[in-house]
Image (cartoon, rainbow, N blue to C red; front, side, top):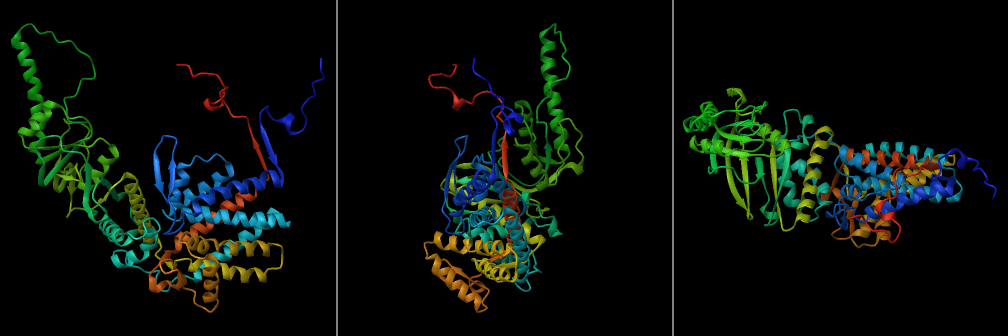
Length: 547
């Protein structure tokens, strides 16, 4: 019988099957490598010339997009350090709605710089101190780059809004921004409340219909519902609306009962009472002045028959969220069931409801021109589902930009002009520091070069030439000079009208720096044994699935 040695150290302390990684080589550099791999994926999608990624998720759904937020969401990332970058990207997407790619790519570049410094012999804590100083200084410099007079803006001025939104939309749909921006601007301005800070992104809806092209896109004041009306009435104007959440049908009783019928006469009367009851319910709705019933569930045959008799239009909306939006659009209050008393205050109002055929699909268009305009729909047309999804993301970015503008309308020069200026100033700042963290501050500044470099590479230009000419221009005091990707030259962005939002840059900088410092602070990874039995893919060879 062989001697069985007891496990010692951390092996003896933790359960069998755990993994333990520690030290610079095993933990820190491996974490950095995983994050770099993720940022390499998103980096080529940065900017207007960014390449698309084809992602197929676990449900076999295909995504063809250059939107980093969608890409990192649909990639099922397992590595815990890379997940930190994904969370930073998601936080940026939720806070601003744009700039997720900037966060992930910039964080990857910062970690690449950290790896170089670690290999030179710097300790991660020195790097963290340097990066924190660099981030704080970068925010100071960013404040100084804000365009004068941009802090006050009339959010209902369409031209000013388009000027600020153009860069965000162009990064998703390059070349289409001149068509999309006015549509998004119209939609946002229509639903903007008296106090713009309360602007709700959910009030701008997107309806995607196959067929046609981008020039067929329009905005509708109101809602566009996919599907037809239930009855034969297809058009109605200036009508009052009643919304019934529980469906338009005879309700079953809660208790079960038995009815004994002795003669044919009784059976006839029994059926007639049901009819009379349904007619009575529909008549109360008709008497209240409502000409449209919107149902949140099934519509019964008999109820529909009486609705037709009283010339009431019937709409069915299956989604409760869509039903709430409909109530917001029309100002109606949803009633629980058909028998409820209908107060005049509960009724909503629509200018028109009509069934239209757009590209072979029948849609119900609910217009409310004079009403509160609390919901506006952007109707998108394109040839394939992938293009429609990508257009929707561009519209989302534009609407989120409007929301950010309502809170803070400051702008900074776009087209990598801001990044080059930050890189230049941070390098100068690093020379004033005396400790080891000056190397980390210099690397932090150098990392900003990734933006112009990537923009130039994605557009097929010579990155080194572009960066050196940008540095030359900025050193001579032209802080607004950025890259003109169409001509492949450096130009003043105020003539090109390319501006980025201050809040986008500010949050991207903060989130990226925080994520990087979090990753660098990790020096050990301890993983327990995964719970449960072997997964399907780990089955030994020769084992069949039990059918």
